[in-house]
Length: 278
Image (cartoon, rainbow, N blue to C red; front, side, top):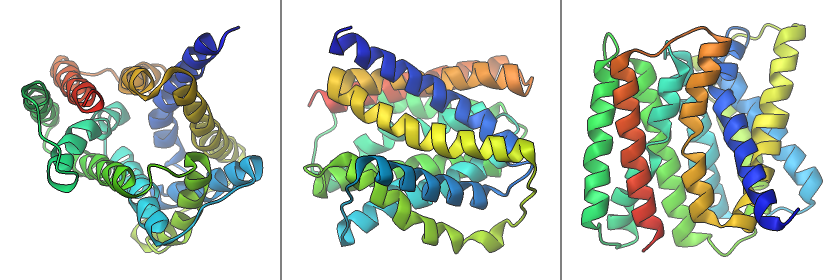
């Protein structure tokens, strides 16, 4: 099997795993608070990567990147899933991250926005509006999910500006581990922990598979097929999330949610492709 085929297999597995994450975390949050889920995912996932990679990179800039890409991202992501009736909608709004990256890059990296990207931004925000309109109200879940996507975008731009020449796997391990104590400080926001066999199995899947294994597969996929193709394919994660949500939680999206989500993802993909080609 050649490297190209391996790369596509890795990215397909990543998309499946991350797509399953949203309904799985939704189920797990019936037993464990979203802050605890974020802590376990950050600490155990980072520890596994450190043990396997046997290398870590640390520093002030690395810490800032960690808090943006892991700490704040996971806190708001899990809160977004908790307060969203349909966790797939949280996935859609989190994956509007490329739209925010383009906008932030204009000011922080001094990159111009192309007409192609403007079209993507407009389509994306129309999709966000329709997605929010499809709910009874613009819920806390939608707000938290958007903030999670924004934090991810800030972390991405900060990484490109300051850390793009670093060992990404070693950096990912540090970002996860340094975020763990930061996340613990938010425990008073939501505190409950029910330990049983089901919650244990869900914790193992969330920390070992979703966090550690998927990230390692992602890094290898990017190395084998390149960041553009990998990032474009992984944009299917919210679509996969809808399928897993239907199967695991039995929640069907409404017609307006499908239209809004499709527009948000198309806008994000257009913005991302335009950004990557520059």
